[in-house]
Length: 535
Length: 74
Image (cartoon, rainbow over all chains, first blue to last red; front, side, top):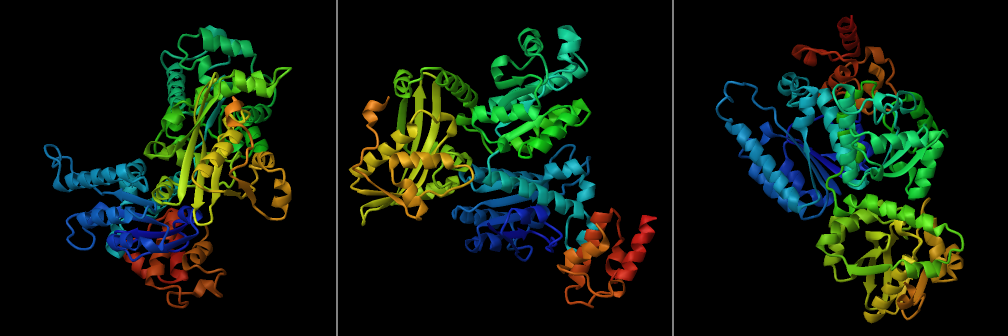
């Protein structure tokens, strides 16, 4: 992405600064400082804007930099749909006597301005507000706001302040283009409770009550909260399995219950082996895993053998853990969808499904009929927009072209006349799987053809032939719309090999066509599968 | 980070200029007064020292800057 960087007062631009933001961008241009409004209005020429505003620069200013003008220009710029990262901070009055009875005017104005920004962000999901006050307070305002720099060069902050802004903005940029982690792998002894269950026994471990027990209980509360937002919990513990479940089932201070855990590997194998298995069973890549273990040796081993897993360097001071975990960037998101919160049940039913499937004498067709599977195809609307964008960003394995879209981009497609966008959901005896598939189709009415821009299916639902049902339903729909040909192009990535096999099922010539660089062209009268007889 | 590396990064140079130790502001086109300030602030941040208001305008050659750094680090 080509970024424009604009600040309300001077900030240095040389290569030694803004390294993390540079890492996230293809190019970074700096506009003249003190001209936020102008930068907002010239956003057409860039992919995205990073604005850094110190409120004291715009407060009471009647010129180009005034608050009202900025808000007006911001509204106008947001219409373009490009991401705007707006950082805002305020070097507030530090006198405690003047603020003992009344809030001073500048502060009031500041809160009002911030409130306005958040109001705007409610209706514009391309606006990201970066609250500098919080991070500056954490590092100490007196280390950040620098009067020498201000009077020497119109720069309000110190070197440290610049680094903080660089960190915060790049974190938010990163999250806006890539999804958060999905799985938290936990050790048990001295991680979920104090002590070793195999030695200390049920009465001897620390969980609940005062002191360290209180810390472990709070740590579990945070884990439980993460679970409620859709983070999957798994155990990797070197222990006797029955000992661990004894704690879960019989210690009444335990916050986490057995049913909160999606998969557990409690044995004496290397943790890296166990984590790899968890990844296979869940069908989730190791890069969506976070590992938490109190033991630095276990951490080091996992780090070395599974470099894709994020290993948290938990400090020896256990009392720091609850706060560290609850503020971990790895699990932070801008919003949590209903889909997210139902994940655990879905993954559990998938594990159950896989188990049933691996039984002997397994007849796939008969099985699919027995589980009462019902797939649905719906046009995308506002209520499914955020989930649709999420699907394009998160799905790696069963994804035809791996095109990533933001909500705004999808909205544009919906508004255009030449796109049809569908979201797929499914229910069966193993649970409500929610919205699990997506297809974006570009119509060319003149040539009676259509191009399959996106075709993806969440991997947790694979094995039910839903992809065939989706493709056939799309063909039927196109046929009804007077389209005769569907063009399918496969873009290979390291992880989407599954699609290849599927495409051969759709067209037996696929491999031949693909190897000679050609697209598949399916006739919309074709029947790949009879959707009425499938389930 | 060493002052040589900071200098190259701030001035956006691939290699250190010849006779670096006797260089002063204006000797190369990249080193103007703005770059000088960026340089001094980057030194402060990386070496954890602080220059005074006056020094921000007086420290305009490598020899002076190195001297002052040595004093501050004592």
